[in-house]
Image (cartoon, rainbow over all chains, first blue to last red; front, side):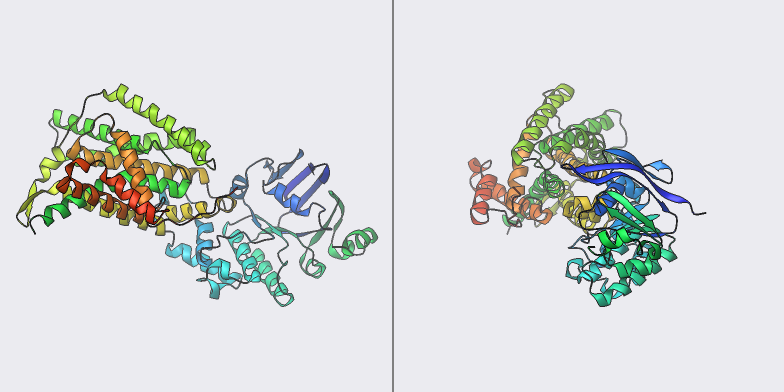
Amino acid sequence: MSTSILQVRDLHVEFNGVKAADGVSLDINEGEFLAVIGPNGSGKTTLLNLCTGYVRPKSGSIHLDGRAITGLTPRAITRRGVARAFQIPQLFSDQSVLDNMMLALAAKDGLWTMVRPLAQPARREEATALLDLVGLRDDKNRVSRTLPEGHRKLLDIAVALALKPRLLLLDEPTSGVSTLERFSLMEALMSALRSRNITALFVEHDMDVVARYANRVLVWNAGTVMAQGHPDEVFKDERVLKNVVGVA
Amino acid sequence: MNAIIPLVLDTLSSAALIFFAAVGLTLVFNVLRVLNVAHGSFYSIGAYVAASICAFIVSRHLNPYLSFVALLFSAALVAVVLGPLIESTLIRWTYGKSEAVQILITFGLFLILEDLQRMVFGVQSFYEDTPMRLMGSSSIGGVVYLNYQMFLVAMAVIVVFGLRLLIKHSRLGRLVTAVVADREMAQSIGVDTNKIFILAFSLGVFLAALGGALAVPTSGVAPGLGADTMVLAFAVAAIGGLGQIEGAALAALIVALARVLAIYFVPSLDAVAPYAAMLIVLLVRPYGLFGAITTRRI
């Protein structure tokens, strides 16, 4: 039996009277790759914002490994082992690809190493290894704002991996990526997750990607979980086909 | 030739002290975007503490060379005690506020610190020149010159290159740059931005206090030093371009040259010369020598 690493219980959030989460409860199990699908505006990104501290719930609780993280700051949640890759990649645009990686690797180090060089050989090696993993080694000296969108997405994911998370939350990892690059990005991502034993939740609109890579699918609609289960079962559900798959 | 050598040496040593007065102000503005009017007080507190410790060393007949350690120790002490305390209780609340609010709050802090100095150190002047006497003098081109003044120039050069190295290559400097570029992004990768701000502010306090401590053997310390330093530091920061460390170094040279030329040729204009230099530079380059036009967020 798999262990739940993230427990969400009875979450309520609303923005100007619109319910983005209306009593939602869910678990994310260790080692799984959980896809969250749903129509635009249904509150999928809000779920990620709640889990990473960018939005506070009106009521309800979120626990990571049994410890409450509800209401903690994004920095505190990152330090507890939750990393996030954004729909629009969040990078230090004027820094090189390698420097973005090294900053993420160095972010949590202690006070006493503050005056030591950022580009320590071991850190540079670790950053290069991660860039290798997502296929960005050749771009390592480029300034990140000059990268094509697909590569910026990969770098954002690599930065999140550099934080050594237990749980990685990805907001539409394949949006803005060309059809040709989409599956190679997902293969690189899956290989990185497997090799580092990272549990992941990803919000996605591309049903081919969901069907091929997710272990479990959670269908989010109007702030509630409409259905959940293995992709094969979920994609046969009439309500899902009518309300979500057709419009997602 | 005999007239040029002392002019150059006087300009360099004067520029070193002026640079120390301004570099912390410009660093704090660069990182925290705060115009700290109380900056001059850290300079004078550094001077008072250094003078007191040096006087203690002399009075107890301790090794007089300890007075050099005392100069550095005083600056570190002031930075460690006042930096985190003032940043976390007062300066933190001014981030993102308008310059007018920042100036009002830090001016209030300046008044408090000035009164505290009068309460602790009194209103008499302190003069302690042990480090300068220990270093002796040299003859350069037939002109006898104090080695301590060359030491000040060397210290300023070390600080310029040291700061550049720290900001461009160290983990602290790179994290500071990252926080300045995108605070939210820095937080999302787990950077403790509060700690970074405390460190950056304390470094600014250290540089100001170091300037004050190093100035004690040449000019002593008296009430009003903080206000004089603050005005001069703002002039230098304005000439160099607020936030520019290399700009502060060049501006310090310009201000020092203006002042030394005035002392040599029109002594009555000594006090006016730095500000005349500032006016001329700002008329030609309104954002300073190294400053850039920035867009104001509305």
